[in-house]
Length: 175
Image 1 (tube, rainbow, N blue to C red):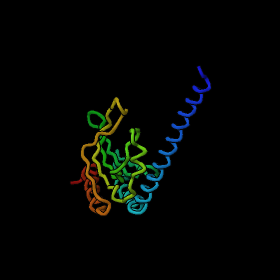
Image 2 (image 1 turned 90 degrees about the vertical axis):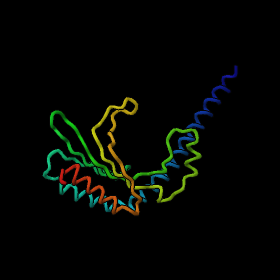
Image 3 (image 1 turned 45 degrees about the vertical axis):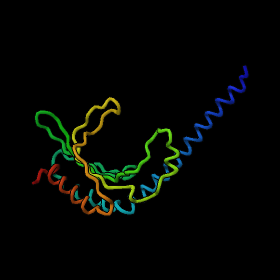
Image 4 (image 1 turned 30 degrees about the vertical axis):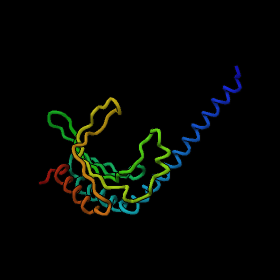
C-alpha cells in the first residue's frame, strides 16, 4: 500500500474543494455587489424616506415594530402584534427581490454563476403580507406569507402606493 499516494489524493481533493469554494465566493460576491449597486441606485434613498414616514405614523400606536435592513438584505418589515385571546402577529414587508438568483449547493452552481448576466431587470420590488411565525422542521421558524406581489423597479411608485395601502389597512387598521 502506498500511504504517500493516499495522503496526496486526500490533499488534492481538499485543495480542489477549497479552490471551488473560493471561486463560488468570488462569483457570488460580484453578484452581491451588483445587487447593492441596484439597491443604491434605485431604492436606498426611498427606503430611508419610507422608514421615516412609517415610524412617524406608527410612533403612538401600540404593538407596532419596524425592522429596516440595508446591509445584506434590502427590506423594510413592519409588524403589528395582537393580544386578543392569544398572541398573534401580522406584518408587511417591502424588499428588493433578486428573481434570477442562482441556487446554492447545486451540482452546476459554478457554471450558472459564471453565466450570470448582470442586468437590473434581474431585480424586482416584492411586497408581502405576512402572518405569524410557524415552526418548520426543515428550516426552523419561518413567517407565513399570506400574499405577495412583485413590481418592476421602474414601477416603484406603484409598489410604494401598494405598500402604503397595506400599511394603512393592515397595520393602522384605517379603512
